[in-house]
Image (tube, rainbow, N blue to C red; front, side, top):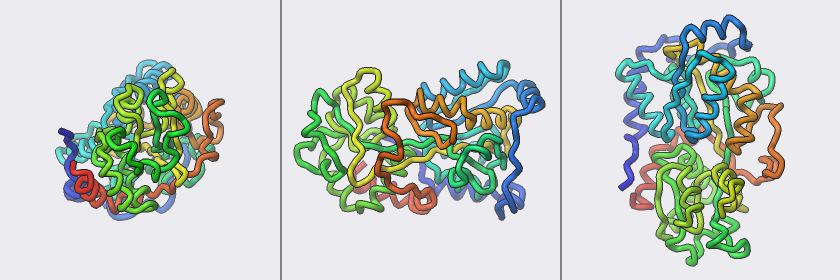
Amino acid sequence: MLRFPISRRRLLKGSAAAALAAPAAFATRVLAQAPAAEAITPALVEAARKEGRLAFYTAMDIPVAERFAKAFEARYPGIAVRVERAGSERLYQRIDQERGSNISAVDVANSADAAHFIVWKRNGWLAPYLPEEVARHFPASYRDADGMYVTTRIWLSSIGYNTRLVTAAEAPKSFADLLDPKWMGKMVKAHPAYSGTIMTATFQIARDLGWEYLERLSRQRIMQVQSSTDPPKKLAAGERAVMADGNDYNLIQLKEQGAPVEVVYPTEGTPLISGPSAVFRTAPNPNAARLFYSWLHGIEAQQILVDFAAQHSVHAQAQAKPGRRKLSDIKLMRDDPAGVERTAEEIKARYAQIFKI
């Protein structure tokens, strides 16, 4: 039986109480202007080395998060990165519980649900910090105007199929194709109450295709899993022939490793997911946090994101890997973190009712 985090509505009650303890300047208003851009300086590196560690809470796949951690540790010896990985909703719950218990453990957080940063900023939990490379190379639309968070990575929630079980000719090309009776009992799908990716994808699909589409999809006897990383694995293992959602980057990685999988970007448009990061105001290792945050959005880390993680960077100097589809060549659904934040509880409740889970 799948188990999911407590509701965001309950979390917000605790968040509101914790926000009362934050300085009024953070809790009641946004900054008058974005902070000045800051470079990585010898003084920052030295201060970070004195702290010697940082905690990175993330919804990234473990191999990706660990690759980032090891690359940073190699670049800045003497500073250890502790990766705390979980689904976005569980990370959200954990941070809220820690704040409610006056525990300051997280230094930098990355989520697959951009709506989380709207709440954290509103609560006054984030520290304003603008890395120089972000100011120089990131479009303004991919960073908070007050310098509270930055879009670290972008990916898509695609559909896909196992090439040993499904031919290219018969494979689904659209979301509508998933309603064909021939796919009954042959699909796998992740859950928005666990995965930030699927929360955002469900919002976009319900908005653009209507809840009626999801109601019809629910009648297809779909295998329900938790994380967006699970459907690609089930597909590669041959446990299901088609994935109704999940993420495209795991399918790309698996295909490049020789697995019998193929990505499909639906003709109606593919849900676009943005994964921001932020430094927390009560970070126990503030200098190491700022150094890691700056490095994470620099070209070295952003190229790792593209090459190793098969995701997309908005850093102007990042180069797409040859042979992979460019984001500009794919029809996309529109991202709307504020819309997700407003309707998250409705999405969870309605999804659970429709899919009976």
